[in-house]
Length: 234
Image 1 (cartoon, rainbow, N blue to C red):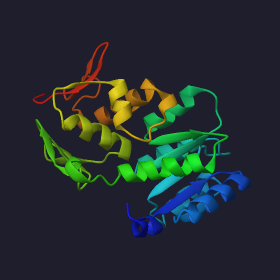
Image 2: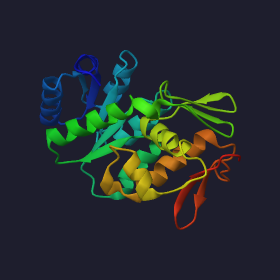
Image 3: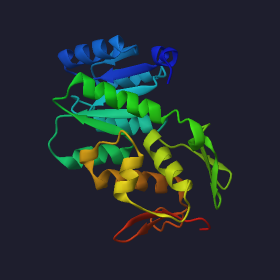
Image 4: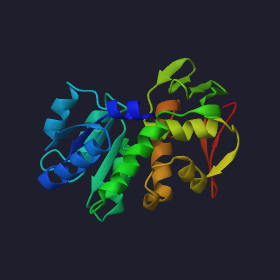
């Protein structure tokens, strides 16, 4: 991403804590991003009907409509990257967020520098360069990284940044068995402390979109005790 591209990048920050909103807004603005803010889930959804941000920073612990509800609503119409902010100790909440389609999360309290690094990483993953741009065809599955397009049997499917990167990485080596650790490393920006369950959440989402029957996957299959494999001829 060039400096000019970064200056045009629009981030929506959603948090009910005024101090956090101010700190995150100022830090991202100083880094060259255009920033909009919302103090509730309802306000965020209203804004999203009028603006098209490149990324959303979303607090899970919002009053009223919480961040999980907002994520669910956003994902019904948009694949915009989402980074969750959470103060919740229960890992299950973070995994639910990932299963709903969030791309990454940062646990409160966090440093603005850490959040900025996550923002840059997720946005960078949305704009691959070099050899990774070459299209891949695996059976009736077609992946075009340059255009961020995936089709299954000619039907276009919409994936989030993390879901797309996981599928594109596996499509470059069809029939290879990937461990969860290898997939976690390939998807830069996914919270490492979410561990292997983060990969399982993304795989579950990909299957829901590319499989004829997600409960009996034929394309993205589990290799028990090892990881996952993208079948060349399902």
